[in-house]
Image (cartoon, rainbow, N blue to C red; front, side, top):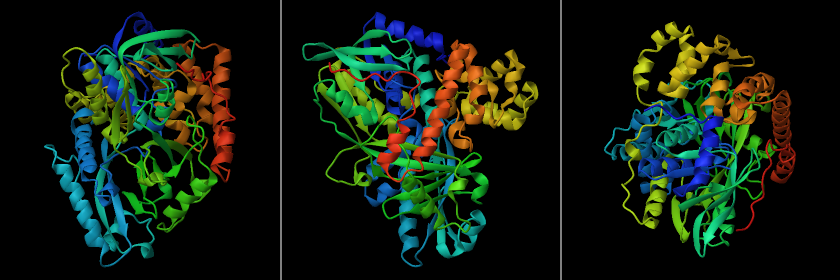
Length: 574
């Protein structure tokens, strides 16, 4: 089966098809949960559509810690079932669903107390490994091991010798979160789903009490359309309460947003062969290997301001630097920080005032006939959330529908990935690219790498790296528009690639070149190229300035000073 393309023509066709007939289900929200719902529904044979107001994964699902993990800290909360479920999903993703996108990553847990901590931490990590085995699958990652301080220092010479007494090393997994969502959506489209970004829901269609579809606006053209569906699924994360208001505020789900920020620093700033996990007074802090970089995060603070563009303040950045510097022999400074990103966790609201204590479990509700709401959860368990949401959809349909099969459906690019990886030297020779380039492509596209190489064959100049971001080929910029649903420069530099957080210039140095590459497949005029570059530049400048502010309120006000590339439509009440 050929993977579906998500280019401009496919987007237009998807909007036409969604407006032309009644669907079985339309999904609102193009993050990991919405994408998972679309794939689950499509692979059960349901006629499925999905709309997203901005770019795919532009909210929480591109701003996570980029880990696929069970949640070691949830063991302390005795939430064994949540950990077991997440570890089962980790095994599925590593070994069956997305081996080209999800890969093992080691972590070192430095200990600071000599007597009680090793047996305590050791028991927790041993239980973590055991729960990972109790799934019918192998773990997919090595087991943990105990290390003396001297052995730990050989793995992580960057650690301050006086800061710890010994360590435990264990393994989890990581993923490029935005790329994973886009691949989920391409897979859903391959099985017949119709997906369209930059399409904002502004109201619901109703027949009496029943929801019968959505009213939407194509933000690229301004056109209004009605999408009729037998069931609507709201999978909008931190926007859940806003969507509930469109049906009169009725619903059993209330979500509180928690802000988490991350720093990106060059790999040579921390001399270590392994990631780190550190205990803080509130939660844990990760130092995560990320190609030629480290990701350091995260924070966990309540956020009540703009949900589209949460801003990181100076206080957030200093908090992370202070905590990681407590264990590093050579401290990091703000000058070492290449990139900063902030995201919002959609936590189910409860009794606690502290967001770090709110639930990471998910809930599905059916507030009115024809509408299913799904919220909460964590990235790792998106597939379970999607399955439960589609089960609720099926309950509202008057027909027999097969059970979920997404635990046995590899994402596009997974089939044949290992064989191509084993043949990477041959691929390098035949393509004329260095084997390191082929490895980079395989770990981003899997067995779809051949499609990227075809782009280079058609125009050999696209086989050159971007000037100023040489981890990425020029062909990848074009491919993002022709195959991966990118509509704007920001989509490409922030989510299809990670140039905006992996370079000290944060993408500004490549903006013009990338915009000119996008102009052809997206049909841009010279004026549109100029507008895209200006918007991206203003966004980066606003983010830099916001990160110098002392409070959330000040940072948010400055970040909102950057204009949107397309108009943001205020929701209307249904």
